[in-house]
Image (cartoon, rainbow, N blue to C red; front, side, top):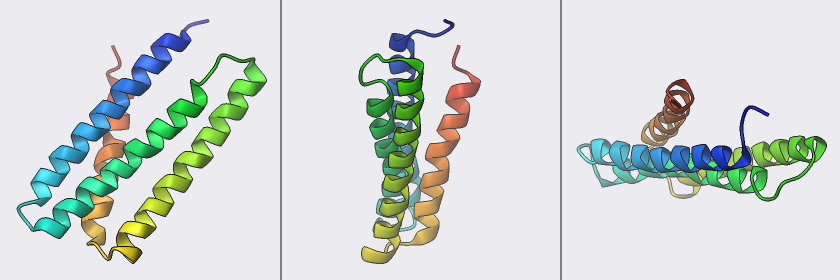
Length: 121
């Protein structure tokens, strides 16, 4: 086994914290354009972090066999995408926040994913 469950949990926690940091940064950047834009950008990134937290809790919940681990990963991914899509719909449709800012926040949080897996050291 190349990776332990504990290292996976640590990586998931690091990723979650970096995504929340990205939400803060993108919210501050969009604050120059206005309050609604800042809220939309921070919410877009925070939704990705929430989805990551939900998926991580599902995947790293309790040790199990390979088949169960794959099932947990798949259900975690489905839950993550449900949270992200539902959250983006709520941001843009229900709260009528600027979509460009929300999508920029979402992209910024996913850029953290790329950087985290590129430089996981």
